[in-house]
Image 1: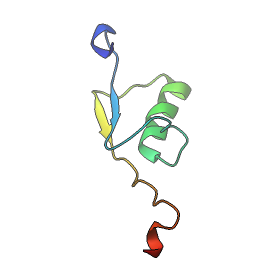
Image 2 (image 1 turned 135 degrees about the vertical axis):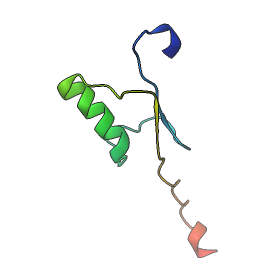
Image 3 (image 1 turned 180 degrees about the horizontal axis):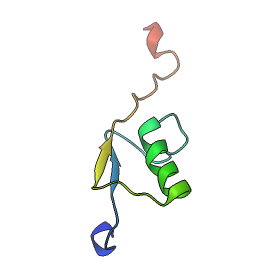
Image 4 (image 1 turned 120 degrees about the horizontal axis):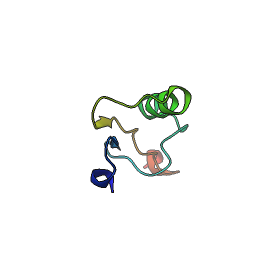
Length: 62
């Protein structure tokens, strides 16, 4: 789909999953906020760092 939308940008999150915006990912929040508030998009496709996966409850006790 991205290739079909001329002028679009793809923002990928390394080791990411869905629901990145407004979920403690400053890189994604910045990209989306700039687009929503000012209509600005990144100069090119980009990758934001992912957040570490949460440790399941009780896993740290082992």
